[in-house]
Length: 417
Ligand SMILES: *Cc1c(COP(=O)(O)O)cnc(C)c1O
Image (cartoon, rainbow, N blue to C red; front, side, top):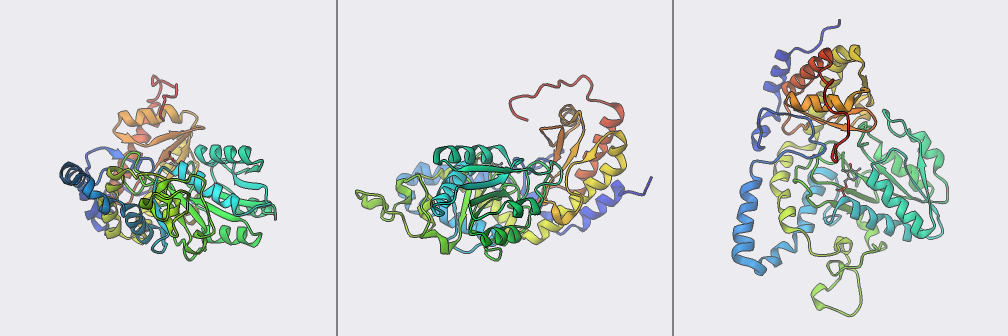
């Protein structure tokens, strides 16, 4: 068997890791947590930050805090823009959930392309995206065309370009696929869609905080994404949306709420959308949830996305190297692109017993997750996952595979996987 990285070498990488010091800025324990792409760890500063806000902002200042809070969707949006998205000021706003933001921006895009009837998306796209587009197409008499894509390799760009016709109004794609982690070329896809006059709406849920993005340079029109995955904003933290500055005036989203109104407290008779990104807001923002993003973004800002990507790729390479050496002989198969340039931050492995294996792994102190069909998804996060965590996780996975330790573990899916 070929030489592979030893635990000692993994420890040496940790000792030399420029991001190693950031791990202490999270609440960590012995758990090998490889699910940072589903729910990021708790930053150590978040608890006190929220406690102070509850005590002083809510407890003492009460409604007098609103002149400050009302700026937060844009202020925190600008922070996400500059630290993680490569976007300009006034282009990103924190609001609602990713699902709702996707609906708002997809509807706005369809309205901006009257006469065109086709929406393109990946047949293996995350379900909420597909369902929302299915609903929009049904409501408007559009055709949702779902492009076939490989479960392990993601969407082939040629499949997409072959489907781009003059009838396409909107293309909705994930920059990083939730299942296999395939990374698309955001700039190339956007340019190809623009050549036929279509708009592109990127879902950045699995890319933001993991892969450096340059929305300005890539000419991106529209984007949405989660803040509770690699941005570590906490369960149900509000999402963000991005609309290119030059396109904002010409786009109207379908949910006309008072937070999108130009003179909100003028309480005027009719809806007149605000000139900036606020026009994509709807109602009162979840202040407590939004506030948790500040300490989380402080850590990301100190890391810098280039260093995050460099470490993230190395963590992924370690998973793949050890999977090849230890797991493939036991019936596992890599279910993600092997080429690091085509992969985001997580790595999936196929095994017919992946569900039961993922449960046996939890019992061994390793949290990854399971995705249909038969995939074990491992999502290290560069800000707090050590190389030795990955090594230990893979070592325990090898032990489970050798002993077939999943026999006896229930095979039924639970409500959450
Ligand atoms: C996680 C994820 C979502 C989640 O949407 P919510 O509205 O926050 O539930 C949406 N799209 C993609 C691609 C995701 O990975």
